[in-house]
Image 1 (tube, rainbow, N blue to C red):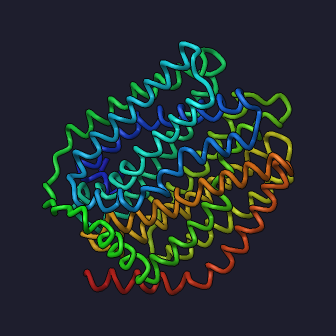
Image 2 (tube, one colour):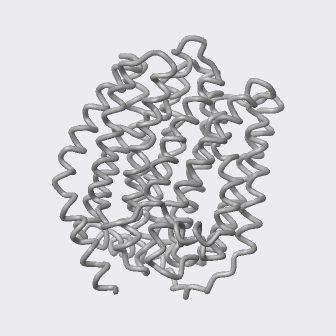
Length: 415
């Protein structure tokens, strides 16, 4: 036990352990719902375009409202906010389950419910990221906390789709949605048990929302390291990460492909992401996070290209494993860089720019990638996007050393 605490110092914080336990249960349900949602969209349409459109619907709220959400998160009790967002997410899952189990679900309702969940996630994702700092008293443990959270996300991403792939074949998509709704009970109980110091709330003047967003913009883009990693992750989120929305079409294109194949592909992607997150959690040494971001981008790009060339399931599984690992190395390291450098009173707003980079550009990438796959084929789309991402990662490498130097200087000033 002591050895585990030494390797994972974030687990010394009781609140964070409670939070992770609730997240573990809830996220299994979340990944089950995500896989079942993508499969039912493909089953209804047999269209790569509508897979992209479904991804667009779930992600466009972040582009439209993400920055406003960041301002609100900085002015409200984040603990109470998460009670609301998690409860509303549960309600969305129950509605989705009810419509599916009664045979009344259609494409329009799926798109609307995807949009609704995306709107809730505008506040939930930014709120959760900002709430971590309240549970981790020692900032030195923050990188480990972020890496552990990524590990839990991707461990459940390994478990959830594997269960969902089997569940869809046996009991159908509706039960996956119902299980997800029930899984939120765990995280709501965890939030109830967490006791954190109250953060002094600042009055939110509606007339000053634009000014608050401007302050967040300046805190983000006047900091060279934060600016560089957010622009790079926005680039990768546009041209690279939407490939996950096309996994149902990829599964169906493989010999004997079906819902179970989609489960394998999603689980393999999650396993790769888990390996990347565990590496960051165990990692010790100098803060060369800029280099890890660049390496993650290059790895993801290279194996998207590989994915365009292989057609047998074992090779496809290896390709999506490596793509998932590269994606996680980049995302988790970017999050750590920003959490390390940002001022506490600007945290929500700066993180809203991160989530805008992650999820605000992705809906447009999903639409474009889905359209390209519809007209030119999946593999041609993966090849083109892989090449573009590789070029972007190559140019980012030149900024990595400057980012590392800025992190070292900041940490030394705080010491």
